[in-house]
Image 1 (cartoon, rainbow, N blue to C red):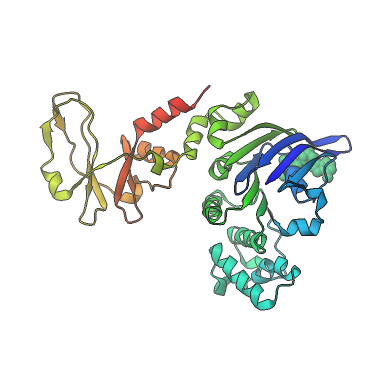
Image 2: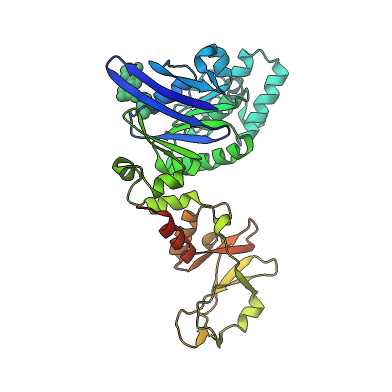
Length: 369
Ligand SMILES: Nc1ncnc2c1ncn2[C@@H]1O[C@H](COP(=O)(O)OP(=O)(O)O)[C@@H](O)[C@H]1O
Ligand SMILES: [Mg+2]
């Protein structure tokens, strides 16, 4: 979909991009990451011809971007930046409708599209359409910026540290919303960040840059498992094994869980432990099969299996959803001091469990060096 062929961008003596070659497939999120000044923004702007390369070429769908008129090119490429760039004197609806207006869509079509987009990004059109940027929170303004970039339904989206100016809590919300939106829209996205957690969370591929060059281009889990060199290793940090867990979904590592009702749990105190092996936690559920508590087996290797007294649990405090990451599961497991975390549905039903032993095993097999 997008291909860089030996692209160089020089400013007088200064090398901003120093001969990069890589490709971005259709419908993937490719995250460019690296320290400030490494050439991320320059790389992005070479795609929509806000900058022209000193040498080499950038191709879009097999055609050099230089063969398109910049205006025509940019209609197919949405652009979102950190400071949002909403026009302060225009309402939310007018901001979102800028490109459709330039494309001379008639008013009713424009308005319909604007409302559709506001809904898509989770802002109630009736409430937000007439507001002005000064009346929005940072997170809301950023959502409007995304809606504006999506207005003409471009196949490609360039995002330059779009959530960089938002506080950590709201940034995480925006990231999750963006991930959900992308699952629906399947745009080809080039996303710039300097936040490694964001790169891991959102990227199908990660391109690590330094001084205008690409050091590694890989799936996030691969970058974390086998950093290409010492710089990448330092960059991804000493806790890369933990970070890597963010690349895997609970649903893919879930095992069958033992559940019993509260009534059944009264009779399950002490039983012969025939095989002497480890026994699972018994998750106790109510009539609606929602998690209400647990019986935890004692880990003594004796001949009797002993359950500790019943402990009441709140699903949202101990459980994880299938779409959560193994990193979240691990933090639940460690936070509760249990060997496993229950996987629960939105209604609190027990779907399975994720075990500490499986997470440990995954980390041992994955990390190469
Ligand atoms: N207009 C410019 N004139 C001169 N040097 C520039 C210009 N724009 C960027 N640079 C330099 O090019 C390098 C890469 O910049 P940039 O792509 O903005 O980095 P990043 O987005 O990774 O922080 C930096 O060293 C920067 O100082
Ligand atoms: Mg930049």
